[in-house]
View 1 (cartoon, rainbow, N blue to C red):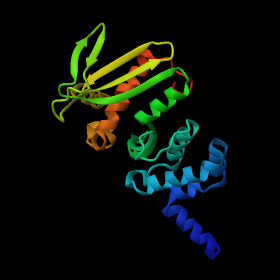
View 2: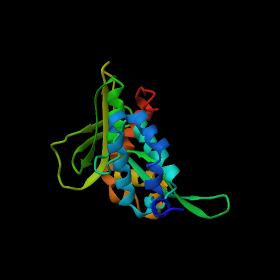
View 3: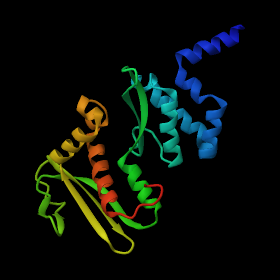
View 4: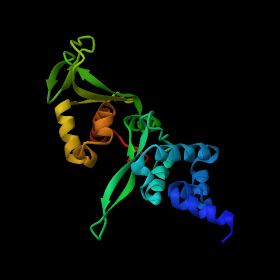
Length: 225
């Protein structure tokens, strides 16, 4: 083994994710998905991994799968943008041990982006609801809000709304308590006290109301499904 090969082997062992994403097969896959933007996309993936110790130790294949999902949907995975995320999870193996794997997770802006691309939405949005803004809650006719009636900075819940080009519209509202119960039920990281539910509850709450609203009442494109 010559010196250059030895150095490459050492780097692959120390930085397995970086070595995996620099392989010709992976590079070609992202070029097929993103064209000229593939290099920038892969760089953003590696930056996210390098800034997260759990992701740095995750299975490279799982990181690739999560990144490829984001690339297929043409959603940026910059953590600050809110379109999509790569999240580390501890997964139990058949031998009883645990290994860290990465999963793709859609942000609330990602759901809005895919809805807009369907060409059927006139408008779609989500927002926190502050104390005083919820005027009426009717199980049949829906909710009435007065966005100018804010009494304090206390967030009592979150609302999502869409209106289609054909005039159909729908609103979904969930209290903060209901959203925390949802996170407790469906998110492993929420139960363990870390992750996006803890670090960015506002974004996760908006994503949840949008996702539930769209899945229940909206026409979904193939991408959204």
